[in-house]
Image (tube, rainbow, N blue to C red; front, top):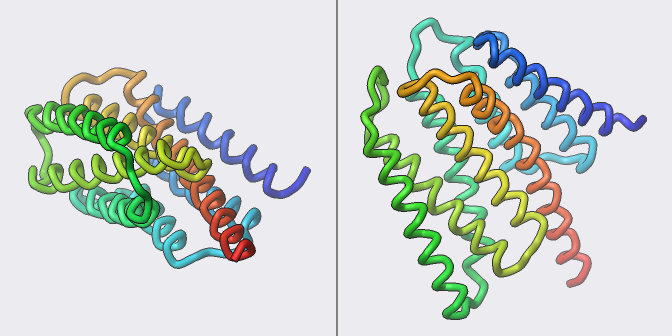
Length: 230
């Protein structure tokens, strides 16, 4: 078996362990596993692509420190991890904008984007209007995070509607996994403690790294094709 396949098997075994440990609320072990998962995803990417761009390296580093931050500090604060993941979303927002800006849009396609923007905006408003207790995070940071994520997701979805490329699909799926993870963990931490919310939130989060890796792999293939074609 090739090393990249072994790493993929290891990745899914670790994800399974995260799901199981989520049932028993073994948070510290889960943090270690998430850190290892990010490293495994980095190895899979390196084996399959043999190079790291500064963008990929930055996202992986931010992801690793965002997942393992609570292992380094004694005081519990959500601000630093949220800022780290906000930076990741900003990078994806920039990449999505680069993919979208040079394309022409029909009225029908533009209408679909407006409808999607309205629905996501309404959903974000409902979530942000919830009473978040026992959190030290400035509410404005939640607003900024939500706005950046919604715009990033809309642009990635728009690019997929326009091109139907694999890279665009993986970015849309990555966005969905992030949304499910954030919503599940938000509900579990502040409103109702349910096992399936912990499991769903953690599994969606680690699955997002696999989708993110494939997004960059497909994006690199597209860029190489363009270079060859030119």
